[in-house]
Length: 222
Image (cartoon, rainbow, N blue to C red; front, side):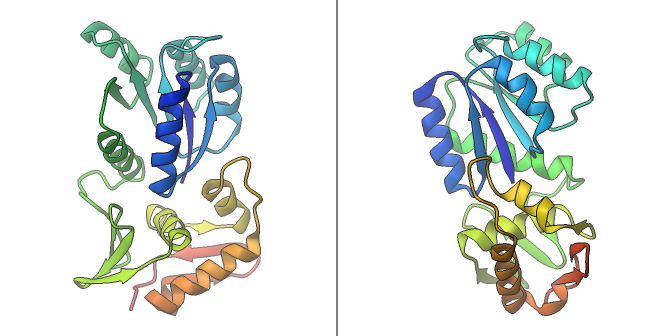
């Protein structure tokens, strides 16, 4: 999953980038609201973490411009402002969730997981579930019929994306856009290798190749 972090406090941004990378997210970081307005509207992010106190363009104005332009990407607001009025203002502007500084990083990670599940229709699920699999995001492994199946970091990132998009045809280019940040070289051959590794662990039928189109996840794992 590819995230955008818009935060101008460098020490906090560094801490969050390191933590989000450990959680298996590809993250782009911006510190200025002017840059965020453009990049948030043009890059295919799965979720955006947005600070309100930004230079250039304030966070609420950034969010307002995104929503006015039709951007539906989930947005989680970070702010040091702890007033009900400003929380309500952020939600009215189109925020999907709100976290007040200071916060524990684990709370942010859990809120991100919940927002991603909600935005993909798994509203009442405590874990990500699809094709007879349960993804344990804390341990970065998958559970099938009560048994753990270990995953590499790359396999975990790819399987999480597949499980959020079951029964959808996903091209290699689409997967690369959502699994790598803007600075990482994208290699479709590497993706194919990871798909084959997942098939060996989960069963060939779980990921179907659609020639000339991409991959379709959703066959029963076995």
